[in-house]
Length: 275
Picture 1 (cartoon, rainbow, N blue to C red):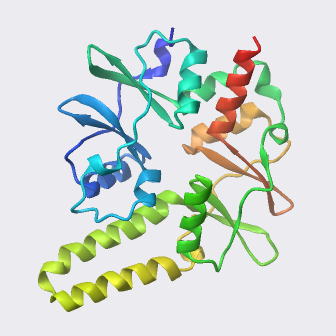
Picture 2: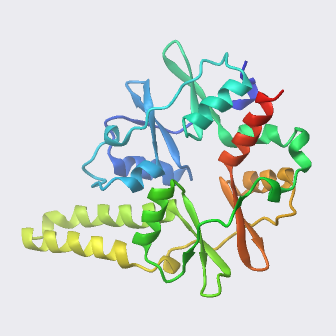
Picture 3: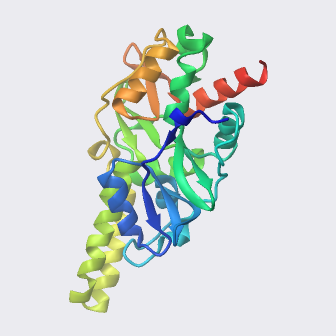
């Protein structure tokens, strides 16, 4: 049975008929990446930053129902192993707990990996489980190129490096989403005051900006990195403190690896399977 401690009563939700701009506003206000989508209080799925960036949309006109992702649900009676399995195979950070057809809370991946820090793996070196040679992008590359990589590789953050491949900052999906989707929204709101010819020109200019804008001008300064010698427990503590789902592993100024919440879930799941 899912531990009651893992079920959080507070969650972010939007209505299926809400606009994408309303969704973005809620996500930004709550510093979140995922929201539940409800239809008259009935759970329909989730909407997250990955779905937003992969879809060419007008945020003021398109409704949330166009980007819904359907995921498994919990009833509260699942084992920890089954909960992790559903989260991992469903490729989702959260799972809603539903009773009597109503959402009573959610289980979040960041809370599950806190449990991993209490297991025999707590002292394991992060170099043993990190992804080696992570995908990076040069600082003068375009935002459009960064987004293309994120779409293709299904990732939300890319280390940004200089010409010597030294790690300088990180490009995050949420930064692009807020910067460009909200800018597009602002342009849309001004369309009523422009002629049709100007509207078309404005839209094309926005697309050009997105494709050619240097990634270094938007990338976020790295607040935290890990060392290959850091323990799993220490890295999980950093992820909790900084509220992030992945950490770049740095050595001699280079990005030598990356560790994500999903890596921890896989380790936890493998451990439970062999028990």
